[in-house]
Image 1: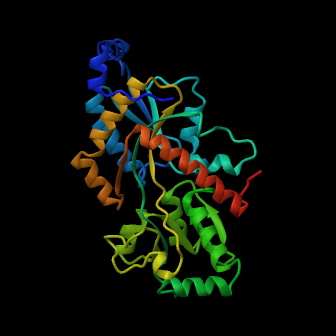
Image 2: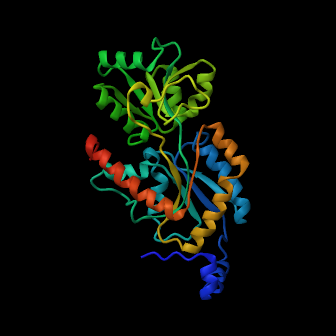
Image 3: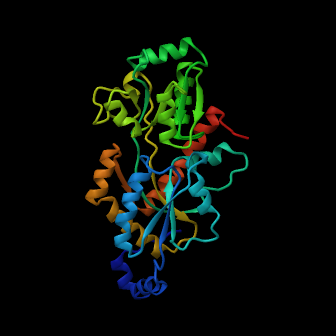
Length: 323
């Protein structure tokens, strides 16, 4: 059973004088903190997390250094954290939704979301959409879908990886509409975008790394996956508006290895929360069309377990085991 004590109750019981010095005596943080970002540099995950880390550094009194670990559909950071015997707060990382999904896709999962992590705070999510090259004949999502149905196996679409929200959602759409299309995984958004520009793939399913190219007229945005239309693209329909009852925004936050002292979790939470709401970081989120969706450590932990159960159920339904 978890007992929550606020500052007033701690003072009332005399525990405040014990808890605060314990953290102070630990000297946390006493060296730079590693922020594991499981994507290539420069994308819609990497850039906001770099800004967040820079702002949190000033609160913590130590640098928060971004370390990119791309690959495995965004789970290499979580894998690295799961291999720590016990966390001391000096390693944290982004927890994309694939952290909850990939274990369900494997008969021998390499980490357990329910046991291997400490949960710091929830941050935000993405605006996802499907784009094609602007010189393609399809002006609307409906025209694109009609072509895909009439040409089984001919439409290729790129995503940031197997098991990503982009991959799972495209497969769900295919199942719902009776479409057979071919998934091409990439290591990150830049590779995915270049593939559709070069004609290697027909469509790109990704977050708003494609936004500038859409605005420049080089790519055409056919549909977005948010609950409401994207602010920058008010003329583009949502999946629900085209008859597909799906909202997918791949929410994420920051986690750490298991066993981090609750007092250190609080220090990290408070520093990253302040950075999250800093105007500089909010402006960066706006630039990538990412909504601010804060949850504290306790709420985020509950949300993580709920997400794990839901994602596992979807994987079972779609039969997407990898081994």
